[in-house]
Length: 541
Image (cartoon, rainbow, N blue to C red):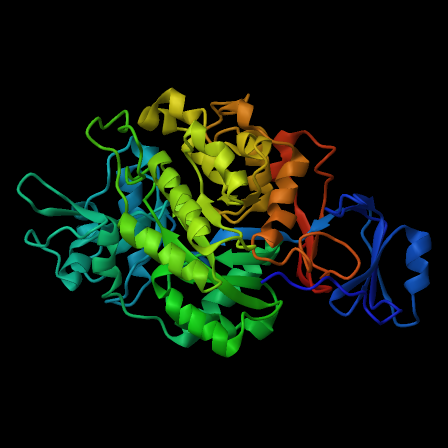
């Protein structure tokens, strides 16, 4: 799956020359430059004014960066793009800080929708109002004509109102499902809260959107990503291969490059798809499988060796049977597919590393680039195994400054010392790639860099950083959002750094990230985003 080495373009005059810039190239052989010459979608040359003058032709467009700070286009290695895109126009619950505000916003959103329309997404956070989980009765009175299924920001718990539960046939007699639970009152009545796989009871009855609705949502999502400096994303939905056709329809809009995952249970179907159609091109590529071992910390569904400190009888649970995990991992790897599997709790991470190790023994050596998605709570003994097994830690730094507000109350101080352990992983020689988990968290790489460098929690309670020993440098965070993201999709030879022969995907920022106080990084502005040498976003004056 590794691409052939980059070829220097035959064209000798540039279509575009960027000058008067401070460029961080991401190339250790030439870390900084002042300009770039671009032919078509490819970098023709990079260096100073004297070098660039050799590529100026009569039709060359000159772009003055006015001293702006230029970096490779950000690569978000973990998104749920379609749900994030729909979330741009859905009810906004992320900062609802009381139960009344939660219900009011849902009721107001219902007023603008036709009767019978589903209310989705939401990204609520019950920690903002003290930790009580919402209930269907909170919103039934304001949504009598609308089924509601709004999801907690981690994606592992959703709230259904009575209309949604009726549509799904959920009653007191409904049994829990493997890898998921239905919260109930003492008499067995469902409260409306469904955890992990139990959410599928409702998902399966929600009407599918039309192709036109999907295309419109995806286009808005791409525009939003461009405004954040994101030029490539790795879509990590657990879907069947039909999802590829959805993204093929918007491929030619050429705003965002996609690396698309298919659900691990569909590994045979993806292998057949690739045999017939290939893995794709520089705009739309596949070949990776997304699986899940456990749930999430905030929903108490992450799988740990020891109990949650606030729930002594609860260690979380697996959402997949261990035997299935080991078998699918071996079989999919044997088919030449990449594996990107979600594991959050230390027991889940340990089990997945065991599955990867078993796969190497079974199938022998090759450049497979295992990915462990999230890698949030690692047992100390497992840190060296990431490098030993060539496992990429695909992590989301925003989660650290979000979960850091309350994680210690859930897992205790000792386990938080190895939570979002960016520094420890790098020190062990592991590869770390960054993403957002959009729509679970905002797809804002600058905020992610801020989070990794400062670790200041969102509530402002940790000015020195939450678990400050795990802070990393600005350059390490930039690499995680650029070249390491490209490596995680077997594309480091065509993007991820600004070098001759690579794609001209880059971002112009209004401040030099290496020169400002790290706490100000989250306020840096994206001025321009270019994909393949074409401007796809310009900040309004």
